[in-house]
Amino acid sequence: MAATDANAWQPNWATHPGEHLAEYLDERALSQAEFARLAGMTPKLVSTIVAGTNPVTPETAVKLQRVLGLKADIWLSLQAAWDLHEVRRREGERAAHARDWLRRFPLAELRKLGRLPNTKDESALLGCVLDLLGIGTPDAYHARLSALAVHHRKGRRGGTSPEHELCWLMLGEERARGMNLPDYDEQRFLDACVEIRGLTVEDPAVFEPRMLDLCREAGVALVFQKPISKTCLFGSARWLNGGRPIIQMSLRMKSNDHFWWTFFHEAAHVVLHRGRNFADDQNGTDDGVETEADAWAERALVGDASLDAFAATCPRSKAEIGAFAHRVGIHPGIVVGMLQHRGVVPFSHMNDLKVRFEWADAVAV
Image (cartoon, rainbow, N blue to C red; front, side, top):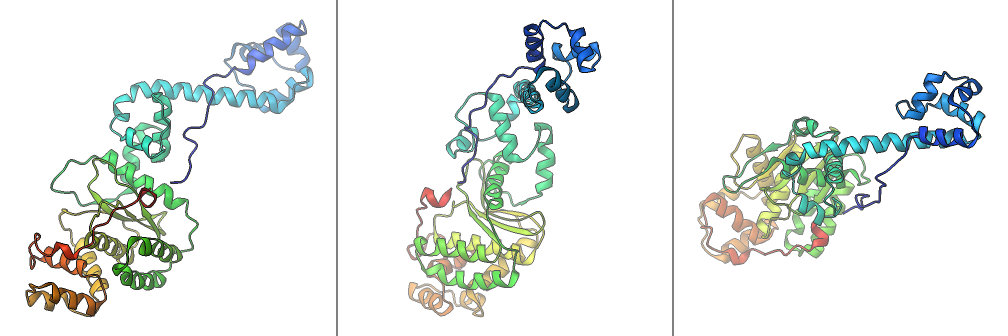
């Protein structure tokens, strides 16, 4: 995960430049009225600056420099520090009101991922969550949710949280935006999918870096983002700024059939449904678009060979499945998974043909 400044030290104090102005006037034994005459300012303006109710503007800063000698940019820096301090103070007040909203997010998991500072300061936590979501205030949360417009296929089992799902998606989006990618090239991505298909027989140590490179070269951001709680998503495909595709995979997939089907299903959305956004779950309901993606993924995996024709033979032996897998050039575990999904092979049978993955943290984050 890219480093962030979430843990950078920030002072929680500042002084209004009016306090410094008052000190200068005391040192020089100048009254506010006398100083106002020398600086060409109204006594009221000087009084309100000293009281901290009026800011030091660039024009005022130049006058202060000419009369008192302290450079204008220092006065403006003092004003900027004060303004930022006041914004954070007001955010702290809002954080207390936003406490219930903030607790809907996976704060502990975001800390573990290094995306939140290890602090109980609600103002700091609120600021970091708003940064992650790319919004200015909690009131803009629903605008962010609707602007992302990810199409969810909800699971039939297990509780989900839209706040947790959004955090997972935005973690992936942050990493995708940090990639230096060329423009999306559809033909190059199609060619990449052909080569990636051949990697299904390899171990993760071989296929993982190669598929990342192939997608990157085609202008597709492939992100393996460790899953977080209350999210039932295995993968998502969406478009950043209308023209940058991102495939994000949660690595919940512990068997090779599930992993590869997820990738090719999301790749189908990139190829078939440009400009649309999707987030897929294993047990979702179909809406037509998902059927299109499933069909494309099947064609991409089995090529010209007909899975329908093979499934019609009701294969019952590992040898039959192995021979078909060899003929089409994919791992037999993927064929087992596809036949199980069709109901041709019971879910309890032939699972030993699948490969179980143990994803390292270095891959997941």
